[in-house]
Image (cartoon, rainbow, N blue to C red; front, side, top):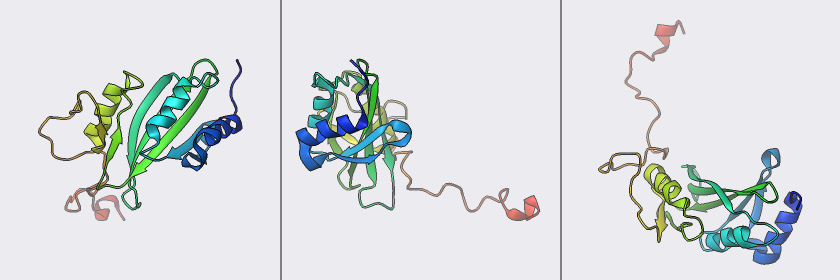
Length: 167
């Protein structure tokens, strides 16, 4: 079985899900689509179990934070079809007030640690996860360090003043 083109992949997703899955990019040939929290498990399940697609390898789950956006938290899934050597990126965005998304551990056991890491750094709550707790940071940490909620540098640092650098 040969590599599936992005056009074919989009056509199959559109046939199955209509307008709930939309293309947002194809940087360097990697198809990127976006869907909703409600549809994510159905989309991932279709990509994994469809006989022609077979995206059986969950490469990564991570998140991003765009503080200025209406839906600032995004969860990103990277999938790889080993039979067709095709990759796809699936994104879901959600408001900061409701960072709940269904767990993908029902589809891939390997999602367990990836979801824990995403929770640990971004605060995304994966509903139905078997053991959602911090994995790399200390347990009593009260912030999510990868969110862009704090200034990048302390404005009171004197060693960063321009006059030290002849400016």
